Amino acid sequence: MSRGCLLLTFFLLYLFSPFVGVCQQTTLEKIAPDKPQAASGEANPDEAAEPELNRVVKPFLWKIEGEKPSYLFGTIHVSDDRVLAMHPVAREAFENSDTLFVEVKPEDTLKQMKALILPFDVKLADLLDATTLARLDKQLEQMNPLYAGRHRPNYKIWAWPLILPNLEAQLKNPKMEVLDFKLTSDARAKGRYVGSLENATSQMDGLDALTKEEQIIFLQDSLEGMEEADDEDIDYEAKITNLYLKGDGEGIQAYFDEEMSDDDLPEGLADKILKALLYDRNKEMAETIKKALKDHPDKAHFFAAGTAHFVGPNSVQQYLKEAGIEAVRVEVDNAEPDNADNQSPAEEQTGR
Image 1 (cartoon, one colour):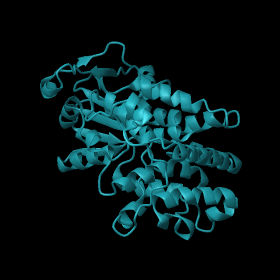
Image 2 (image 1 turned 90 degrees about the vertical axis):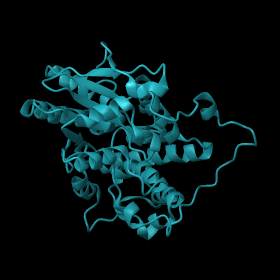
Image 3 (image 1 turned 120 degrees about the vertical axis):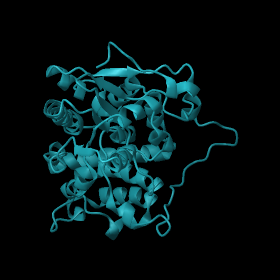
Image 4 (image 1 turned 180 degrees about the vertical axis):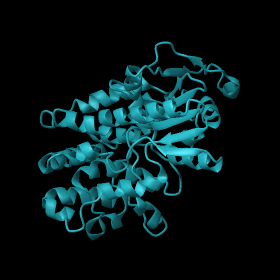
């Protein structure tokens, strides 16, 4: 379970940290870790192999035919202008929708955060050994010194592997919304209904059910991956953002499979984590989508969630297909990018 896999949580789960809004960047200077710098004129290997894109060239968008067409839309939970701009075809589908469903709507995020926090009389420092706690604090100090030590939020053990990449991304651009929240703001400005695809309090029940020992192993393995990435100066966030901009579902799944094949975790633990983070949540999302389509067939619905929920096995589309609902990937012709606004999407017949 490396840092690469943890950063795939950007495709899985958005956890809003209220500490980012309270502590402004002007008063809490982010400290960057000491990393080796490339020699002058020496290209970063990852960048050389994968040129950075300046826009979304293929959206993660699936169409559901009906009285009015509805859409599944894959997002990535990073603050990036290229992502926020969206592909014109996806933007058009969103603009023509009557409702919006996101993983957890903004007013439910407080419930979500409460589910991640330890009981008042339980402290993280009492649950972790001194070495693991120090490693966690070191990661927090590199993001912002006032998040470590006695200022450290009292999250549950299993929550930290998910919190750390989300917190780091939010601190980079504390005033910029992620795509899911931007869609919510836009929909509400137009007076549209906004709903949650998941129950905010039970969203992570599977991880909460892990034993204390399993949670500690999950955290320790995650910290090891983060430390290795820091030492090697690898920007995994840029890498996965590029996969999103390309619309490369196979690339995301291949990357996910590679990271989840980590043999460092005890047998069965990686499967438990994957089931809790992805498969169980996919089932719940599919049920919400089925109900919305059944109860309001006269509405055009726009269902937005992390892209990992829409690629690979046991995807949301698979559970919908079992209920007789077909979602087809929308394809776009990017031969002439400058004319993207005038292009008509063609549907991929083999899409999930």
